[in-house]
Length: 437
Image 1 (cartoon, helix red, strand yellow):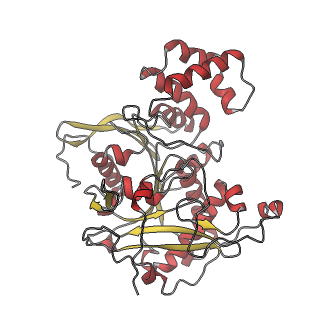
Image 2: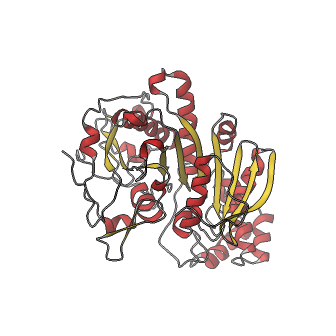
Image 3: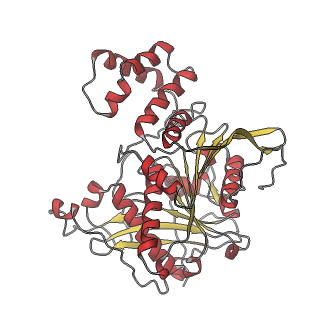
């Protein structure tokens, strides 16, 4: 029987945490047998587990969310076990398109952080079908929801984010990029068994921030496994998009100093002193700071502490970031660019956390050859939505007026970009009337 799933709407809005926390799943929390064997657990071999999914799709069907208006699309939520031995399961929320869902692609959305809920942040504040009203108890329709163009799967990953959980406390201590990719791959294979009508559907992956680590590594694993496995387990990956994406910490820090100086947040003198004394490099390497670097860091913090670095023109908020890995993802992205899938990178131009300046340094380091030089794209009459640079096997998009979370700040432009990505078309050069509504 279809069940009604209850979400704590007011809580979900504040869903981007600074660290992974334990989350109680439906099966509850217990002491795991691995909890006193850290080294053995670190070396625990990975293998894909495909579990029977009979009847689980219908059990996951959501009749209606609390405070939800009437809709014309199906929605589901539930858990997929990715490691039955330790009791690790990932939570998902899935919304089909209201218009001919059988003809539309499947899209996986991942938030970053790591620690940001794809349900609470991605689905409920960015691109999902609903927005939470100010009363915190009712929902309204998001007229720029991305499920108008695709069937959207929001995944809470890794375990410990949102409603995803593990019965082993070691999973919260040892969770890293590699295991996150492995769990997400296992999730997808099992989810496709639960929803077999999507097995051969065009599949895309999109995410923001630290998903600049998650998505390329998951894409790499999918393509690798597609070559190794039989045809019944091939995931039809067609492309990836990563937005305001942390892909290389060095270039990001270099770009951040440039961005803050050119936006009049730090002085020319401080900017030059940070670069000339290599303070940004020393910070990344966890080296002992020189006296001048200590002074620079103190001044930097004083000038930026009350600025919302996620959108420099927005009110200051509570969001903070924590990073799993400082490894560069540029070799992985370069590999994906030659794999035959579509690769897009986009940046909101008001983000100082992962600024477009750092992204452009990273793209330069990829050594991609230019195909079409920078041009303005439009999403309405006389309204420049941003800028596009097309490389061979890579498209780079700037979204004007957007911060770290583009769909929140510029929902119309985000939907225009998303539509172009799915269709494999460059964003419109001409002054066109917006047709995404």
